[in-house]
Length: 445
Ligand code: NDP
Ligand code: 2IT
Image 1 (cartoon, rainbow, N blue to C red):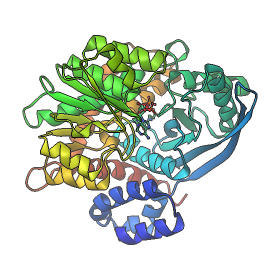
Image 2 (image 1 turned 90 degrees about the horizontal axis):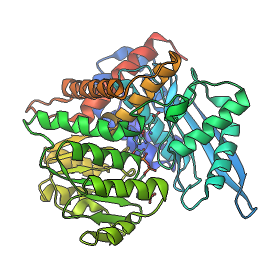
Image 3 (image 1 turned 180 degrees about the vertical axis):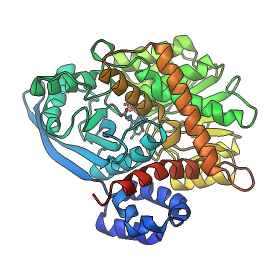
């Protein structure tokens, strides 16, 4: 394959989807050499079949708001690839959602899920509906209307959705309820369910914990650890919260958290009590991060900015895609950052990645570092299948092993001649090889 040619062709066939093109470009540029070692791949046009989703469902979602108005949103499910297992991936509810963003996420998910060592294909879905500012009743009606359509396209052995931005335990619960009502079947069709109805222990914590376990593995290669390190975290949602929790448990100091309006910087560190406050603020009251400084006035709130200009040892972006620009990456490097590990999906722009790699700092892409979330989703599927539930210790132990395994695979395929580990290359090649072999074995389908 000629990566540039494939990419030009995809850009032409699918215009107006910059995030999808960005994700594909990153993967193709790193797997090209490995791919071309296998002429049989090209003969089977594996690359196009791997880049273009198996199928995409698009539907209108109509629902009634509390004032009696009828609202419409768009709903999508991108089933990208099921060569190694049922389609699997989250659902995102956010005003910014469009098909190109979901195609990038489903593409990334395919490689990520391959890395987890578990049998899961890649998918992503969502809607341009934003739960922000909506009542519980409105969120429930929307989730029900969304599931009314999606039901036909998913199933415990077909496609198993979960949460992502704007979709947490509350939304998964409402969607699960509607699926159950429509199909009269109690099955493990969604992951991230409540503990009382098949949810796995440690699933809420898994993405954040997993990212910090991955960070620990990277630091270990330098004989270093999280203890005593200062840490910048972006976001204040599910991933950010449990990332902060694990950093604190390991003796790190969390300086920042954020939302789409701005960030807070606490020079004394966000300790356990302060994190409890943030969890209550975000998860129960659904408040804004700026409210933090009303409670902790020694902290500052910076409106309209991201935290990357602050000085710290480690950065853990945990909000959204393209949240670290090339300039922000340069600021982090100038301030002496030693490691960047991505809790979010594709938070670093291509320019930012180049800055990190040129500076030869430890840099882990989301498809490796945030794979803990979907890994525990896979473990939730296993528990649902055997109608048993494992202890928190057991799930955490397995999560730990999976993150170590992903790290080892990155080293295997990403270590360069001078010893620098290119985790992007390592993750992409390791994820690719497994899917490619499965696709080759299954013929042209
Ligand atoms: P949440 O909805 O719980 O939290 C998202 C956080 O990011 C909020 O603080 C939100 O702020 C902020 N945010 C969202 N969109 C934007 C934006 N466009 N600009 C700036 N800030 C934004 O989502 P999660 O914590 O679940 O997801 C965070 C990231 O982690 C995403 O990239 C997701 O794809 C990824 N991820 C999630 C996994 C999971 O299991 N949940 C697994 C693997 C990756 P605000 O409230 O202002 O919108
Ligand atoms: O991006 C992700 O890996 C997720 N949002 C979690 C997907 C899942 O199926 O648990």
